[in-house]
Length: 319
Length: 263
Ligand SMILES: Cc1cc2nc3c(=O)[nH]c(=O)nc-3n(C[C@H](O)[C@H](O)[C@H](O)COP(=O)(O)OP(=O)(O)OC[C@H]3O[C@@H](n4cnc5c(N)ncnc54)[C@H](O)[C@@H]3O)c2cc1C
Ligand SMILES: Nc1ncnc2c1ncn2[C@@H]1O[C@H](COP(=O)(O)O)[C@@H](O)[C@H]1O
Image 1: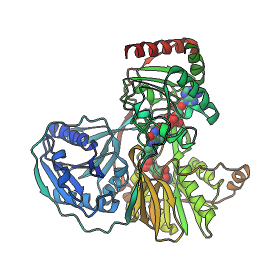
Image 2: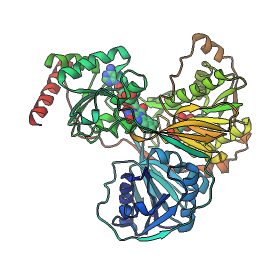
Image 3: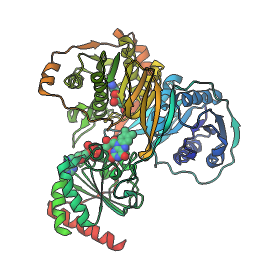
Image 4: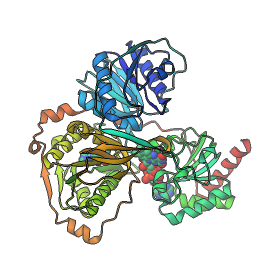
């Protein structure tokens, strides 16, 4: 087994830009250990995406035409297995997304492959492939290897590997999709609720509260503080799931990305990967958390280890 | 009709923690345990189906040492009549694919009709186990489920799958199926004091991998990775603001003011 196979991801006719990050990770591995890089496009009409994945470093683009526009785990599982059987790669790379949460591990179990998820660094130590991921709410990192595995499946964390912009000159080929009856069926998409009072994606200054706020009755004082500072109030998921603030205020992977934000104050938020996905790009992050080891401090520019209620109370004297 | 709900007792690190001498995990002196948050939601989803229909049995199970029984009792305090705990010391440090092999073996032995796993575990966050169980069983599966309509015995269930950025997909899945249940699908109940008391009397079957017909070789072969080491990540550049709360707040206020002035 040799070579790297990247599985492209798309939804509703749009290539997931994380695919180009995944290609970048493959290209970096190829630099240290020369080997072919192939990108498989599994789609009803793979031609749509060929130009977009033809990035520098890609040797082959494999089109696999499947009879579905939407992600169906049975179809994708069998198709990736068929492409792996056809090309025999040593490494299969996916973006770590909701779609791949739904099937990458199954591909590995069925094929007898090694597997690691949410990987943010990958390298060779001698001949061994070593993947790094985090545990314990990002407080510890772990290095994993895959002894005895001919093929290893990795899903890669987003916004870590810098996407390749430079166009490439890959050969284009095709593999036949296996015939599979999907046991899931798409009924439709439900668009995010846009009826919120503010669009946090537009906010320049944000103050977000997390589970540390404790209970619904405590929200009001942070709303007042945010107003007094001229900041927009946001939140982490548990606050929205509990109905303490509307879902439209939720920052993160399944909420919103605060695209325009310049200063983000995170109070009582631990800094899960899913929360950080929506705000880690903000130039000035100020974290207030009573746990000095909370991972939010790893991306903050300023940190206060302390009680969010006390700090909030004192801050009111300054606005 | 039976719903199997695999639940995990997760490890939580103390605010100050150290690594074990072998560098393969945190020192157990600095670890507390609690039930995995996601499993509160999957168990609630199963209980709601049980309560809405006759003839539904909900069985919580875990792969874990003796103290993991606490998570099972916590479930039983909310409902359900019995639980299953699978363990053997050889399983210490077992990864998600190995755990999934055992969950699948229990599903077969129990003749489960549905498996509701959590989407993610709060400690190791693999987001793999439920999908590996489905692969072992050859069942259809959906990950990150935020709504569920299921009539016991029906050929399909209708689910919402939560995608990125608030988008949701509505879909059907053939049953039996494995679903991984996401936060917010319901409002998990609290156990009553009476429930907690009653749970103490409910049986927890203890099974070894061998009881489930899974050999040591099969377990070893199922590991999807080997852990080389754990380490504390290099910290970011956060400038820590010291002092009393008043001093800290004053400093924050001036930082904010300055940055906004510049912006
Ligand atoms: C598919 C998927 C998508 C997700 N999408 C999102 C998303 O879009 N957004 C999101 O936020 N999460 C999302 N999550 C959930 C995510 O995994 C975490 O569960 C969540 O971000 C945790 O929120 P938190 O930091 O507020 O809570 P916790 O992790 O519980 O952290 C609370 C923090 O508050 C601190 N604290 C407590 N009391 C105080 C006090 N008095 N003063 C100061 N600090 C205090 C604690 O030290 C702790 O660090 C998603 C999960 C999945 C699986
Ligand atoms: N040791 C275990 N025993 C029972 N269920 C588990 C165990 N580990 C993981 N799970 C299940 O798998 C889900 C996701 O775990 P993970 O794949 O680690 O993110 C959990 O919510 C549980 O439903």
